[in-house]
Length: 68
Image (cartoon, rainbow, N blue to C red; front, top):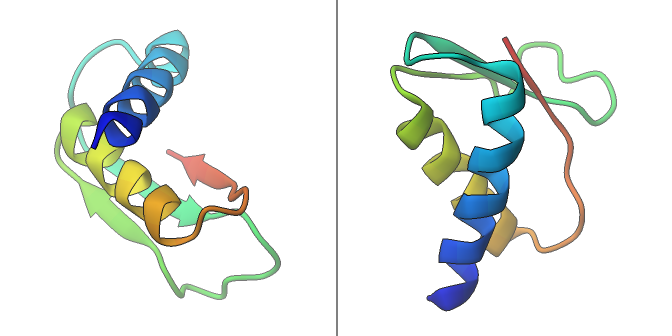
């Protein structure tokens, strides 16, 4: 579980550089052409960070995301 916490801290730090406050976030997978598959909407940074962190635990290889 400690790994999840450190992942969440790293993700939060990166998001803080580009976002200022909570709002709606659209998360898109960055690999290949997703054609609408895997797109999620989150209502807070905490929910966004949790989703990305869980994804990294499920798929430990490097993943890229686009956050809007």
